[in-house]
Length: 153
Image (cartoon, rainbow, N blue to C red; front, side):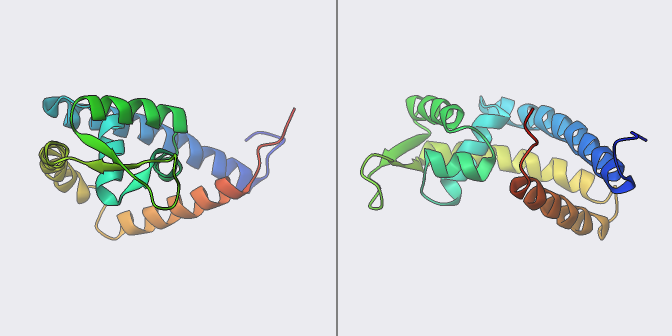
């Protein structure tokens, strides 16, 4: 226990470290799942965001917890590969909307098919009821972190 932290603070720190470790493993798994389709986990995420709903690069960045510049770079690569296209945005003249092309949708379906097999194999490991409870906890922690500013030096 860190003497400067409360028991709740220690619990949150342990939780955060566990989530970060999990995120690293999920990133590696995502890269492995997307690789046969010639993609990376990051490209998969941006392509899936564009497939979810027409959205600007900035909207996708907010939804994915990524920087706008990072999503823009990936979106431009996906566009160059013919997997997404930009369309006019009626809500904003300069912020174009990303839309998947038919090739992008096919690429996404290929990755999703591989991910389904992987997720199905892992889904029962912690138990069917544990996953929704864990998801609820992660979402609550995410909301708390988004609201709480990091102390400045």
